Length: 125
Ligand code: AMP
Image (cartoon, rainbow, N blue to C red; front, top):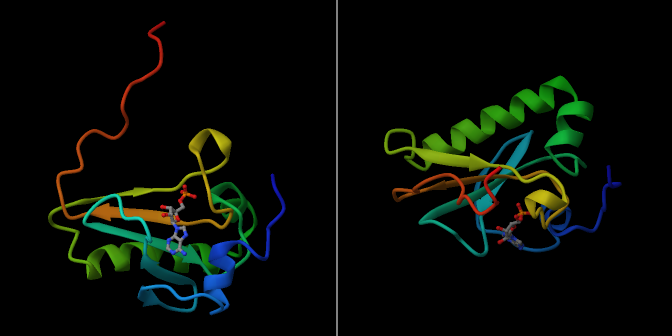
């Protein structure tokens, strides 16, 4: 797994070095609007700790942080009013997923009918 880059853009947001449109913060997590939204609601939730991805976080973060982070994801979706209409969460890990920022983030998408999860574009067996 790649080593954590202390200067990735989300680390800089956590340190307050660059701004974000914050929607929620607690001891475990920070949530803010994605700069390039893919749905009417597109919010990113990041843990407050140096974790590259879901694989790194679930293997190495303390239990209290894992718990607090996932509770924060649920809370943000609820506070955005997305529980009843529904929403999608997604986390990319590694090159096949097209992860661009090497700090774990969960995308929350909502605010419209999101359609099927993935487009089938690989050859049938
Ligand atoms: P991923 O491809 O899963 O790594 O997603 C990275 C996401 O971060 C993309 O949806 C970007 O639009 C978003 N992003 C990159 N820079 C910023 C920023 N400064 N503030 C908010 N979102 C950002």
